[in-house]
Image (cartoon, rainbow, N blue to C red; front, side):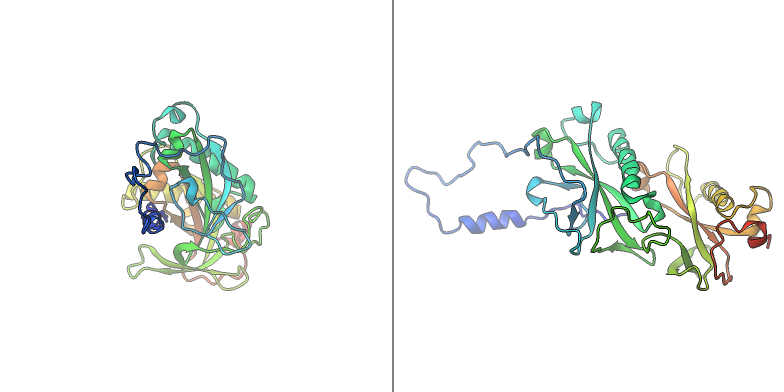
Length: 303
């Protein structure tokens, strides 16, 4: 899932031009207010604030002038859950580490762990996406080596990012949190080869799908969702999560107890360090009215 707003636009250029319009330069002044002066770098002592919320779209890069946090009780899209610092080779670069680099992946791993502490659980257990925001080149040249860990909410039924009006601090501590992935009613595609839509429902209402956890994939090249071998590997991992969640054995009967849905991250997220697949138990045409967590073989029999 991606929601990058990579460009900042040219609004500031237009604003400066407007403010300067109509001012004739005094004698002896050429009107060039910048001359040969270098751009002002960000102060190296400045750091973004943990717990700050932002009303603008998620961005990969944010210069200091665009840092405008808002109260988390007001409508916003992203929340900073951790601020880290690049070190070693990543910090020695002339420019910020690019997406997919070793430095970026190390920062993502730090963000992943910090987000879990901030939320009370792995962010993948909720309707959340994790991304990094870095300083602009001018800030980097001025000594800024920070990175922001940003969480963004989304609706499973509509993959667009979702605005919030409260902080995410501790948001996944309660198992009944409305942000948690729990039970769903799924709609298959016309050919029955994929899931077209998942609607959230209360677990005591009829449903056929239930979130069971995440499967950590090995550190290998991106598994193409169209590759049958990759599909089997990921779904085998998700079946293991079903077994652990429902308390049934991992044996030859497991594949006959339930189907699985794997939430496939895109290749850029994979390259950036997200290696855990969200896994769902799926019983086509079933009308479950309670959770199958710990149900055992009686609750999840061979079908």
